Image 1 (cartoon, rainbow, N blue to C red):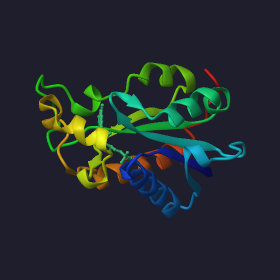
Image 2: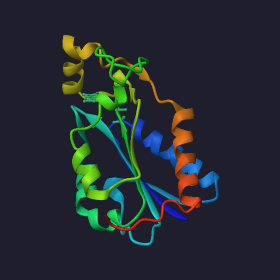
Image 3: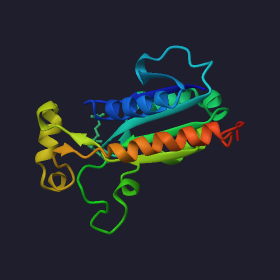
Image 4: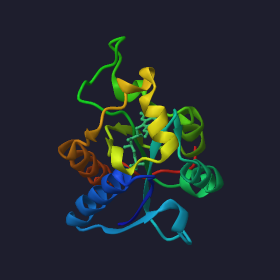
Length: 182
Ligand SMILES: Cc1cc2nc3c(=O)[nH]c(=O)nc-3n(C[C@H](O)[C@H](O)[C@H](O)COP(=O)(O)O)c2cc1C
């Protein structure tokens, strides 16, 4: 299987998730290419796609959303897995008791699902390095409402990320990922 893993990352956390997914897929004997979504050339010739973006202010990064929209036909005809790198912190649920990864789904989720009918759209906890933030991001983070939901730290769960990649391999290699455009 030839798999293309694409990511949109502003400060590197999502890139790290994509690279770990790629390493896990490669270790299982798949041919894997991992690239920032902005730099990808031709995308024909791949059997499956994994595409992820960081979530900022409730949205996927524009290059990732635009990539999916502009390649929707080809993607819809292949097995696709989407992921978002979003919430921060160690609490699995928000103040209302809702799963934080679901509560942090990007606003494009419905559009993304309708465009490419992914096998799954998975949310992962992300990472925030205060030293890497831009000035506007720092200012935003100082707002009282933002403080609680934007703790500094690396909250990526590598075991969960690797397991997700293994689940993708399982689905691809057992033939359950055969798919036509819906
Ligand atoms: C200014 C700013 C806004 C953010 N907005 C959201 C958001 O709306 N929802 C969310 O789940 N995470 C949000 N986050 C957390 C990031 O998505 C998380 O840190 C992510 O892992 C960053 O990925 P990157 O390093 O690849 O850019 C925000 C972080 C910053 C700095």
